[in-house]
Image (tube, rainbow over all chains, first blue to last red; front, side):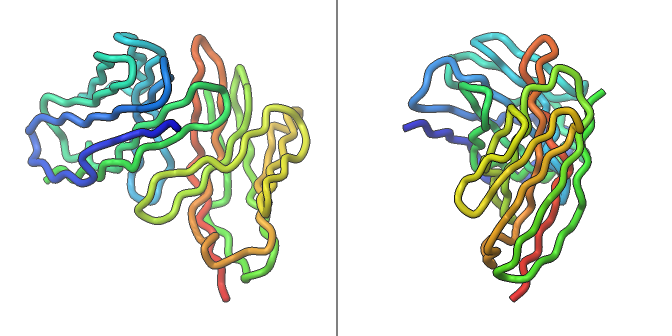
Length: 111
Length: 111
């Protein structure tokens, strides 16, 4: 069966520090991978999506970046965090047109 | 651009039926999905409609009218555990598949 792993679960980082969040998928090949961010009490904002290794599409101009070094690995990074980067970050995958499977999320607080 | 509208909050009594509406505006429409999210958790996929009509999955049903750019999620025999946020999401193709989420409807189920 397919599973998605996302870590860490919680992160508190100072302003200006770097960020690296990792997501891996098991049990499937060539998944479409996505990074979403959710502000408290709000909907999900699409940040990046990837249809294959090295292929990244950015939806929102910001100080975040994404990379896909392997088929089932998706990484979200920042060189210098801002207070506005705080939120709940969710990795998701799909191989079809129906639904996404989300990771358990990382709650990031920038202080 | 793309947009979705759904009510911010709905309250219902245990055992009752509740309908959560969603209207959308998008180009390249492919389908409408529904997700459930409990506090502190990740969204979980509930249903997907690509064609007009009603899809039933246990106590939950989802409806789509493509001509009206409208859909709804119907929850029957409400249980306390159904208290959660519900998101509609539009999948579209404009050079690549993307899914945009609504802001979510907070459902409160009362005893």
